[in-house]
Image (cartoon, rainbow, N blue to C red; front, side, top):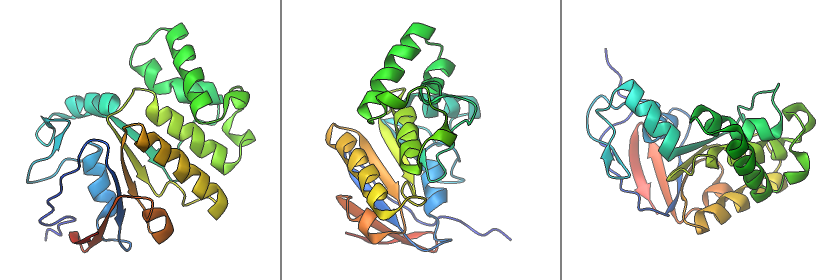
Length: 207
């Protein structure tokens, strides 16, 4: 018996928009985000990202799209504990084949953007949760993505630090980045210009 995770989803997101996606556990938010981020492929329907139909691409092609066009920010940060701040930020650049000097130069620029230039040689265990999330945001920006996808980016943070992280993401959005945030927190959702509410795999409301 098949149980569809998403049903009759139809959504257009303009370049530079900031959208919040809300819904209870099991409503399909994470599945939807995984499709938007090319981590999963829909079993039917079409998905266009930056004018490319990605729903029919191979796994290798999806991996290339993810690397070039999508920046991910997760609730759990997903940093590599053995690496420094600078090394964590530069990982996407390293895997894209940039030389060491370029990786370091761009990683330093990104560390400065997120306010961590004085922490570049620290490891994740030496940072606060908010600082670790800033590293994750810098890493998400490394390959100059067209879209930033954030899955509960403030979920492990206190309210004050969560607001700082959202203000950082909003500032990036104001500079032209498309931002989609999945959250259960109405205050965090209110930062978005559009709020999409999901239930049982469907979009039930759009404010």
